[in-house]
Image (cartoon, rainbow, N blue to C red; front, side, top):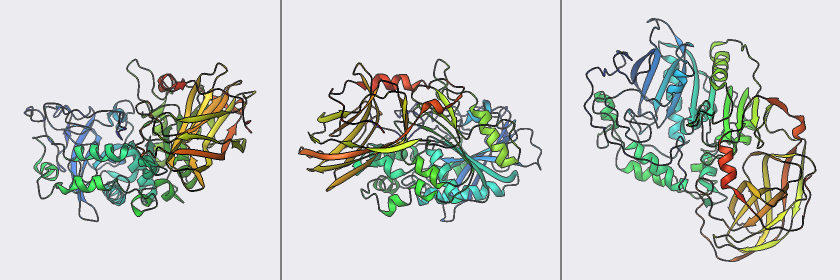
Length: 558
């Protein structure tokens, strides 16, 4: 199954109903007329909805839906929470959803209902990036110049509105989490705080690993081309419909999909295409207060580049990190369990915004970083990663056939005498002979030989030495467990876990030797915090358990 850069949805299904007649009470907002829930049931209770249009510096017209407190006096001002993205179209977030009439997107209704954003004295601004919803222009590969131009224009506009105090916070998850990081990197004077959930930190690394393409090089442009051409609601205002119409002079054009698809195809990681989209690199010296979430077991927006971003960012930082997949804070499973395993998301979100957008001192001393490790235990940290030792261990040689099947060899450590945490991002360097691809996997091996794959990375083999930076991790080996290192061809994996598209060489590859660089930590030093295991961990263990080849230990962890 192909990976989708979307909010946890794995397929796009066009639903009937886009052409349904509007109901008589479905009032449509404009920039001068606000609409309440009583006039349009798609407007959240307690909100007033208006629509606005504004230009970018390169001539694109962007559309924004604004939700303000219904009882806000005409001359009052509030700080604004801004989200800029691709999922705010009036006909549906990911496909046509069958609404009876137009209205603002419900993408972040949880901020209003559970988070009580309007009651807390904030407004919500949802801006369509170019090519989506009611905005003109052509979309292009995410995180680049177009997104940066649009986010800057959105911040300029939001700060200058008569209902705005001039203080703006950004909020998002997945795609609009990426634009929140873009906002941080702009160092805009009106942007006072950024909350980014499950973003991509370096777009190139999400598309290719060491030169091996991922399915995202195909799926992501396909998804966004579909969204950009999605029909909007027939009762939308004429300007919105003109901007959204596929064949309109103001709207997208047929060449947009071709150009968007082509923008993901550049294989050179050092090209300007990707350099401008390395958000971690461009975070150097920025200081906007930042609050992020990241699942170490993400299948979608992987934990690659996060550590570099946080190291480069110089301002206040908060984070929730743990063993979940592509979920947002406060999200629950069908049976009511918290996907991140911890209560209090919205209280912490608005304590953060109150501090930096309103200047209100926090009444609760939240830890800088909250981490759920692989045991399901939560702890507090001043910063992440925390390691009490680092070191390198030698890796023995071996061989495999680069056939894209299961050819590999395994070596393992001596069992650890006490719980030992692997943190940061492990790094493997290999000296090889032969051409093709390499996959490195780390496994947590129990005394009975059963193992859970805890990290992986792939690369094209380089002449001489090939180095692979694995994903950021926070995994504890229980006492008596060993660490196994598997080296071989790029193996097909479980859906959502392994989606590389290698071109195999079918050559025999000889590994002459190598090393594994690790950062390790002692869990006995943890400061425990309330929380339960993220539900994803249970499914992950079930799908990623195997029995690697046994053998005598060849190394000892530092």
